[in-house]
Image 1 (cartoon, rainbow over the protein chains, first blue to last red):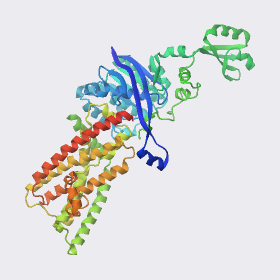
Image 2 (image 1 turned 180 degrees about the vertical axis):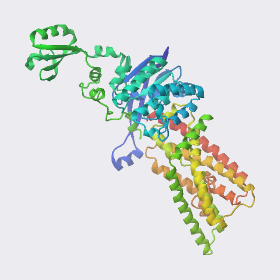
Image 3 (image 1 turned 90 degrees about the vertical axis):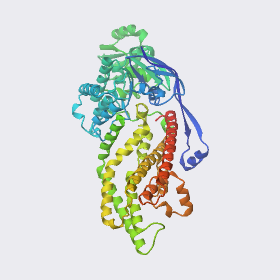
Length: 354
Length: 262
């Protein structure tokens, strides 16, 4: 069954240009130039009940805007959207009781109180009866392993613990659709992995439809079989994660260990040298010549070891967005990168909204 | 209804986290009001008289104003502004809860602790200036006063709620908010009884809704209002009018919020 249907969705933000300084401020009182930011352009997709879909794209691509429209926080400039048969921006209680949105950077938990209080508040806001509430809370707390933290003030929790509580708060009313906007942002590697494992398990056991946006390639790689890649407000890819590499990359990565040094110009005959350190060489070899080239390499060069790999998914994405691999994909995907990306995501429109 | 009872309870617990700042604020305010009371004593001691007020009536006015300032007047706009500006307002658009009712509940429960303290402080000051407090002669006046104060509380909240909603349109709302809030308090009679204003200003004040927050309830306590029922009716009309205004502003604000994101 179709859970989410989006047809021809557009969202344009208008904001005012302000010249710098006092003079600019005064001038803007009387005359302001209106600027438009097309956050979402002609986006269409359909998601089946129970699917777990990833939204990928750089900052300001329109991921968060799309999720906000699906949640009823924003209304579109044009287009048709239904989620579970409801039009989100009508904000009907019947729809609100069936979905949840977790915004990695906008906590709903009360900062100075134990998470238990925020849970109780959601219990009554969503009118969950006590017996059901206790059962669901018990289950979620057990899976997350945070039973000992329920009575600790939220501000004293680590970021990972807090995100677990945020997820619990969002799931108490057993939503059929769940929007996760950067759920792992700022978390350390272990916490990220815990959250991912939970989302994967929850989607599988509860058949909840999930849309996930993330900067962290690993979130998407681990969780989503299907991805929607958004760039500059448009969907540029909708399909399986595995097919992405086929569609956008025409080469494979061949790594060699050589017995002795080989001149660069000799190596370059077989493919583009992307990395070289000592006797270790990485080549990008066109897929169509792969078999031939591999044979040629083995016979012509003192090869001690040879391996062929697919291009890493983050490099594929980087290629799609016209960046050199490693420009920005790298920091988000390296297992050791516990730090959040330096730039916090927010749609560009916010700054112009003054 | 239960959801709002829980909002009340949770926010009450939350406000208890800020016990120390509240106590300090009340102490400071007690000092301020005491100085005012001494000032009035000195002025009256010189043989002066302020319009229709005897010394004990004047003392009572400021003592009640001291209590009403905490119990009736509302200060939630700051939180509302933060909510809207930082985008936490989004949580209210996705949950089945009424934004106006939510803040009304927060407003009430946030006052509970302060109310207890302020009544203690007022009783303490009352003990010192006791002989000068003018208590109503008719016991029914207490009930009338409570009704007037209750209406004032609702109206004060509605006005404060509207002030908070300005954040939908202005990012730098702080100065504007203080300006409006002080104007409201000034015309409510927190600084000076409205009938001591220059005539023209008093005429203006008498046509505005703000008098029902402070001035009118205290006048009722002092048995200086000839027709409290007419005051109730007028306050009621204002309550309905400002409620409709608040709903309209909120609806416009949401359209604005939806348009610009956050």
